[in-house]
Image 1 (tube, rainbow, N blue to C red):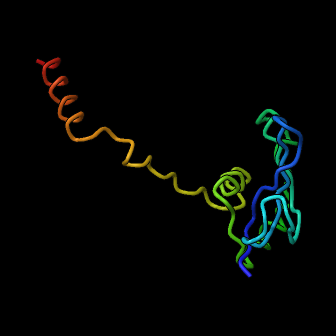
Image 2: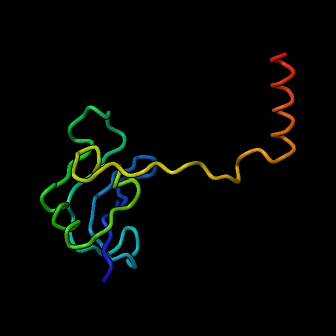
Length: 114
């Protein structure tokens, strides 16, 4: 049984509210979960204490048992200093300009520098 700590969406259309839950990784996003350990309201200001409410003791327990947080939740847990800050991935290389465009940009830069 692989566990994930993730967000379960609630709230109405265009007014999201999330529960922070521990669930099996095969269960649906808003489906059955093992335990609710907090809530997250992205509409509140970052300085508001009720934006992110989490039971840190339970979160630490589930992390020690082997539950893996999702990317978003690992960032949120790092804000509360429950876990270390995750690595920021580089943007995909697919979106970089292709070879000819890079050559063209390099030639323009050399022309402008001269």
